Length: 174
Image 1 (cartoon, rainbow, N blue to C red):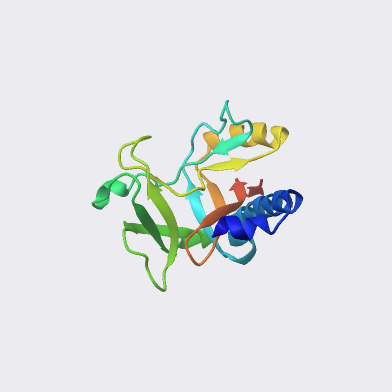
Image 2 (cartoon, rainbow, N blue to C red):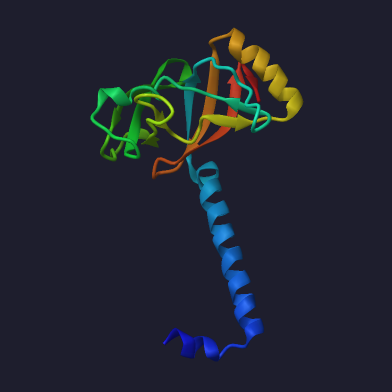
């Protein structure tokens, strides 16, 4: 059946269709990656101090949150989807409440995945690394490890997919 349909198109047209299809797939991937930044609601969460440089990936600031290691509180296995629930907190930051397995309604949440290969009871949310230019990465490296007043500004789409909009260390936006 497919061979009859394809035989109506010349080789040149089939190659062009294949290229067009691949370009459309790449554009769709790009669109879904930036969707939270454009249409997502803003959340601010505290960051735990860590060594911010990744020698293999370059000037990515490595970030860790208090809700990354809370997967032991619920019965989950590697690869399961979890949701971190948040309430409005003090100082304009959102406060982590708990991890749940079922998608919540009418609550601020971020969608994550259990990744027990890296650490026991570790949930990954796709917001654990943030790229900075080299000069700013060095400055952020010095400041984030010395202090505990760092905040990440997130944009979260309605499905829970989150992206980092900015990193704030001592009131300075990176």
